[in-house]
Image (tube, rainbow, N blue to C red; front, side, top):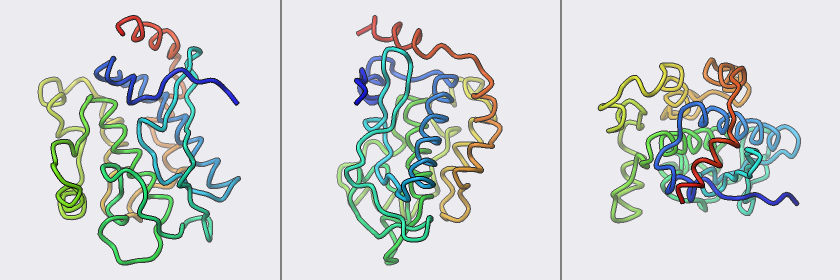
Length: 210
């Protein structure tokens, strides 16, 4: 088993926010991991969030904690399980009477995670009870990167491709969200793959602040 250095939620407390180029590398690694789980292991993660994404000193990114991963019954759907951090749950996991949901629930969780990493703030922070939060997720329009306070003060901070990618992940209807293959072909990801980003150097610099 590989020894990883830190989970992203702890790193975020030090860094305050992650640069878009770093978020792009993280997103690519997480998507590849989720797609591998689907295609090779026939499971979905069901708990995508910063605390379940790890980084090491070499800049490698790993998805962890498969404690509530669900077996897919037809490569798309998993038996319902309400476990998972409420703040990252997709609308279909909190507001539906259906007995099944699919891999696109993890796509939603990824979108929420990306907003949190890029802005330093969870889009649903500030709610006192789970009931209040669940109602917000189920009834309100989905959050957008452009709605963040950080974007309002510096709109050039995030590229149009990044904003569009997050919006695709956070479509309210599950079938409107892209598949993993579609996301891996998205302009934001293809651009991230072509960039030479020294994640290890950035990580080392952030750790010096701790």
